Amino acid sequence: MSIGHASAQTNGNLLKTGADANTLLWEISGNGLQGSSYLFGTFHLLCKEDIQFSAALKQAVISSQEVYLELDMDDPSTIMGALMLMNMKNGKKLKDLYTAEQYKRVSDFFKDSLKTPIGLFQQMKPEFLIALLYPKMMPCNTTASIEEAIMQIAKANGKEIKGLETMAFQASVFDSIPYEKQAAELLETIDSMDNSKKYFSLMLTAYKEQRLDKIENIINNPEFGSTENQDLLLDNRNKNWVGQLKEIMKKGPVFTAVGAGHLVGKAGLIALLRAEGYTVKGVENK
Image (cartoon, rainbow, N blue to C red; front, side, top):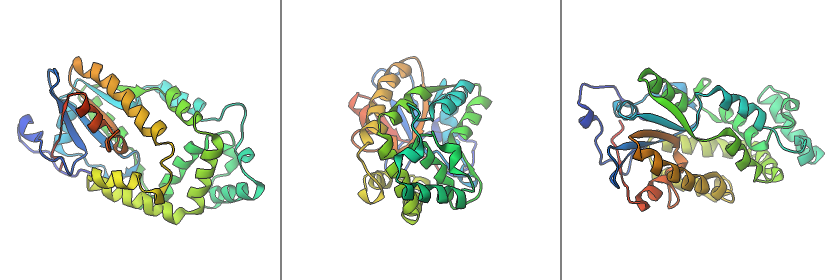
């Protein structure tokens, strides 16, 4: 994570480009844009003490007219929609997706490690259940959301917060991945928790070092999971977002913050925006 203190530099000096190899903050310019927009890679859950934003990042938010996240987390209906859309369709239940022995392994993990009965989540999509395991992989007790911290900066500076997707769309992405496959991934994560922690630790270190090259390598490493659904979870959504941003950025500068995994690779946002004719440069973010 970028760590730094605000300084008395001018806006221009704060937003220095030239950090292409080692940054999570990117300037989007050219191609007819009236002013620079900014793209930032997030990590949805971090140890609270690791969330310290650089002066450059704060200035990028302040200099933008609007802030776009994956979802409009400022809208109460997003949260309500999440609660409704996390469940599987057609009355499917978690225990229907496993043998009795497999289900017991999942149930025991939730009871012993998460101190939560699995019965509370019988109808929840397994992919969402995997997210509940993340705090167990963290090297701290208190976690926080980068998106929430960005929202606080945006609100303090009167910026409107919007979303590139709706909760209904995100839920539909997970509905398009067979629940049986999601259940298998949940069980694999539980059964190989040491490996899952290793993956998470590597990703966390790469993120805090702002090394997009390392993040890309980890995402594409078959040792840490399948790339089978990468088109659904990353590539197709990236194309959709670039289509939206082309129209949004015409109206004025925006600050966009999405998962860092969406920035990297040939089908990542940086490459796609460059292919559309924009100049995308890394911004020093220390």
